[in-house]
Image (cartoon, rainbow, N blue to C red; front, side, top):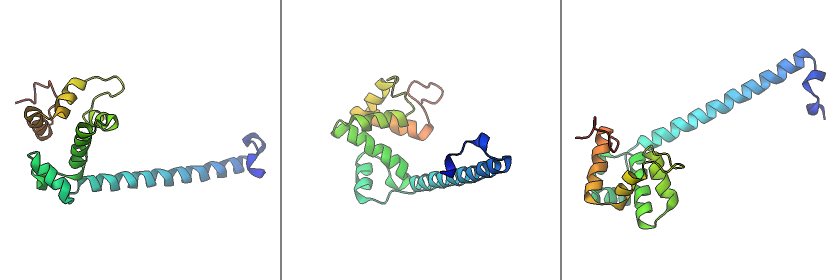
Length: 141
């Protein structure tokens, strides 16, 4: 088992060659992850094509032609949290909204959105349009 030979028992040239090989492998892995992130971001930025999702967005008062897949996925997570009471969906919604899910901070505002009142839906539309956070007086209006 030549591979298990400690570095101190190898020549400096062997150690450099092994290090270089590891560095190249790390670089390739980083590039694969970067390309994967870019692909996912590109797919999330595309418009919504699924007719059932478009219909659900229209029923909620959104123009599906102005919504991308990322928005639609958040929308569906909110629906899932509402309809089946999915804790995972609820946590995903809170996390996407920037709340610390582990600490449970900010859950009051998120609960209002998940309850689905017309006021909450309007608040969500306003927040998405302006980038406002609940309780942010600089962006509320």
